[in-house]
Amino acid sequence: MVTRIILCTVLCLMMVSVATAQKAKRFTTEGTFSNITMGSGGDYGGIQIYLTDSDGQFYATVTIAEGVLMAPVLVKVKANVEKRQIEFTLPNENGERNFKGTVSAGGLTLWEGATKSFLKRKCG
Image (tube, rainbow, N blue to C red; front, side, top):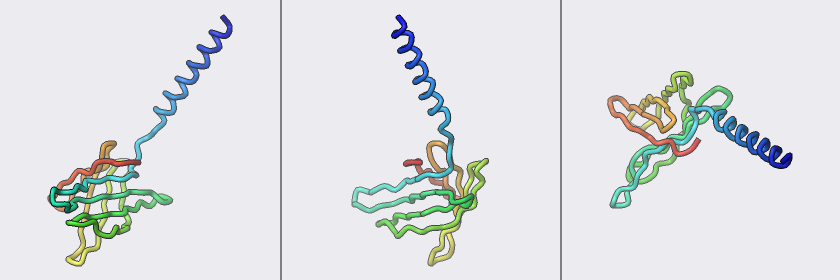
């Protein structure tokens, strides 16, 4: 009988610990977001963004796919963590490309001018 009570107590404590650990997992603006796909001809298209925070300053590693995967570019990001909004500028040989976005649990809604894209959260 005592063994059964101890076992039940241990199991209950384990369940509470698991529930607390799952509840403590907080939302984060950081992560990898991508909508890169491969077309039927083997060409890649889309964009992938890795957002990270380093001592309060956000950075993005951005990879553009236009037929092939271009070299990733590291840029500083203006981030409003409370509103889950980001903004960054990519250098380009034809002028700068400005992006604004909103991060959600499922991904990143990204705007470049009037063009809207959704990048699924891959990890993070």
